[in-house]
Image 1 (spheres, rainbow, N blue to C red):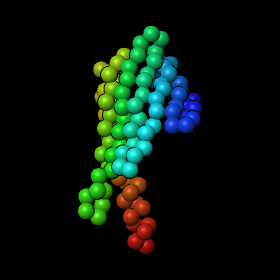
Image 2: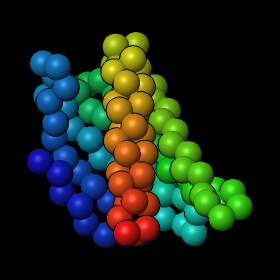
Image 3: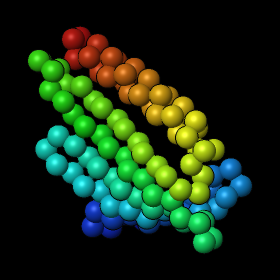
Length: 105
């Protein structure tokens, strides 16, 4: 469950066997979306930041996705988060490719 209100979010999720809470904010500028967040599990805390930047490159734009995290699941989650990002980017590339094809038709 995730509640979003006025640029902030609060939610609960299950990661492996850990039921945890996540809180953060969403900031949007002309070329970047920045999402700093904090994860809570009992007395353990972790914090991170997800950034999505759009960089013009001629007639196209590059999308740069970065994620940093330090905290209670850092070592275990690092590999899984990187795998998730790679999967997300692959899916995004495929969606963009299909959209380009639709627009040419």
